[in-house]
Image (cartoon, rainbow, N blue to C red; front, side, top):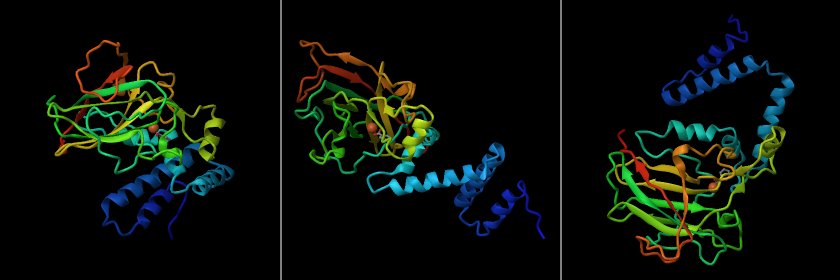
Amino acid sequence: MRDINQFTVTDAVKDSFRDRSNERLVFLLDKLVEHLHDYVRETNLTQEEWLASLNFLYDCGQISTPDRHEFILLSDVLGLSAVVDMVNTKGGGTEMSNLGPFYLPEAPAKELGADLSGDREGVVMLANGVVRDTLGNPLPNATVDTWQADGSGMYPIQDPKQDKFDMRAVFKTDDQGRYYYTTLLPKSYTVPYDGPVGRILRATDRHAWRSKHLHYMLSAPGMRGIVTELFFEGDEYIDSDAVFGVRKSLIGKIQRVGRDDNLEYDLERKPDVRVDFDFVLSPVDR
Ligand code: BEZ
Ligand code: FE
């Protein structure tokens, strides 16, 4: 008869995964069991704490809907999403950062120089730069998919009165690898904190604010696609972003555009400020 105790139980569970033909799945399960068991042994988790944890996960499920995924939010505020982004940043490309819940596939394709701000209130900003490979060569015809909050801190998709495709667009870089468009300087906003994840934030005296940012998804043939964010120097929440999305390398500088400044682009709307930021994509095989 086997002797199961708090130390041998870990191997017993791993041995119970008898079909090991899906190597990656079994590796992930083995590691999960090891780390979960270690957590309990290290913390001396009580039965009340164990039950409270599972009830917390139950509550996350209860509040989730097709438009609200509380488990992703939990992963975000615990820095888990950030670690996944970090370990998947490879080959010298731009660092990855949080996808967030507001990405929409099939955003409208727009011409370079287009304006995303419409007639919304706010500071009009030129967002521009070059998409390069890791050797510094510009990548023409790269896809730059962007989405963001507006000047009030709302994503239009959160407001049924607005067009869900507002404040987002898909651009193709020009023959010099450049992307450029005008938009609004977004405002900071909070992650949802009216659910179980909010309880953790309150219990640990944490705020729910995200440092203001633009979201980007970039791809080009033969290159590793990335999901990332661009942040702004001097932002109030740059060192305390609720989902740990900020990286030093992803901070751009907002610069004033003078009335008489000659800009290097043909733009639909005159900007008040500009942010210059280059992206780097690494080859798929690195
Ligand atoms: C966002 O960046 O859009 C976001 C990220 C995590 C939670 C909520 C929103
Ligand atoms: Fe966002």
